[in-house]
Amino acid sequence: MVTRATLRVRRFPEFEAFYGVFFHNWQEGAAAVRQIAQVGVGVSMLRMSNAMETTTTLALSGQDSLVKWAGRGLRAVGFRDERALLVFGVTGTQRQATQGRLEAWKSSGRTAA
Image (cartoon, rainbow, N blue to C red; front, top):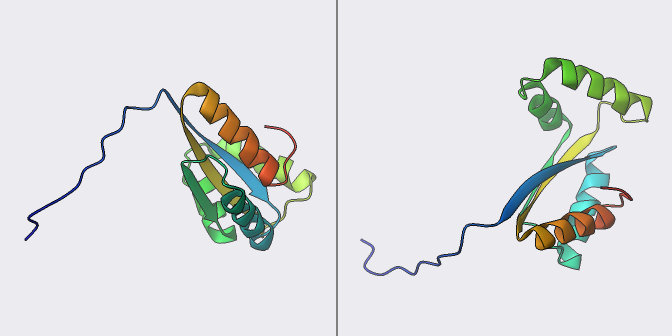
């Protein structure tokens, strides 16, 4: 039986968005997640998917044509079947979210967002 609880109430965020970053393999993606966490990037969510989960996520998106074209594009730039997907979220004010997105991209080894 719960007799006591503490509740933290926060305002509904002004802005929230989610972004995806592909990596050539799990190890590359895991290193990026580690870097993002160690640097203290202001993200609200990090979700790293291995190759099978990445394939499943794309297949379940319901965007068959888009997934097909994205797969072609990813293969054209060197991403093979062992690719991994990092999905990250940013939440807060527009400014905080933009800063978090840019920091996450930089910390993940990507140069543009």
